Amino acid sequence: MTVVGVRLEFPSNQPIVLLRESDGTRFLPIFVGTPEATAIAYALEGLPTPRPMTHDLFKNVLDDRKIILRRVDITALEDRTFFALLYLDHDGEVKEVDARPSDALALAVRYGADSVEIFADEAVLAEAAVELSEELEPAESQVEQFREFLDTISPDDFG
Image (tube, rainbow, N blue to C red; front, top):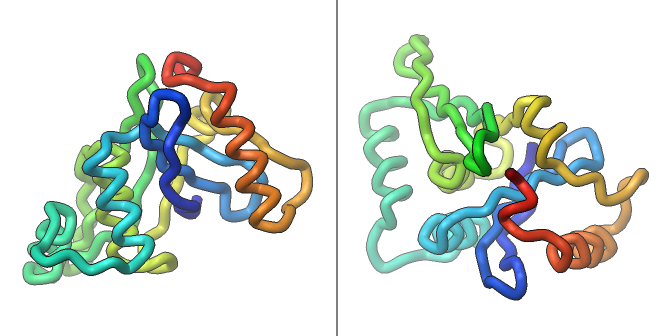
């Protein structure tokens, strides 16, 4: 999966982080909190902050301890709540750490677009992903289709 960006769902103005299948046409919208949406958006845009945000701090600690974030997995969707795992590598020993997807993604995007692999379990995609088109289309068309999709959904649609 790749992180497409952060959008607001209207009319509630609830932030959504949007993931896209790297080799497909399915999109996975995940409702997130405003602080996490801001953290993801800042990192995607490369916007500096006067002081480290929480996810910057976590990355700095991992870097200092020479721990590498290898992978983020969106593992489950239960009662409208997404679950994720971080795969942290310390000297070749990889440990799984439970995380909220919003925090996992906010951390992953701080490493750069191709540095951390992001996956979503097929069961999660089957339940919550949306296929916007049969063919890959120009970005503007995809964004417009996604905006139209957002106009028709609410957080309750993922339950």
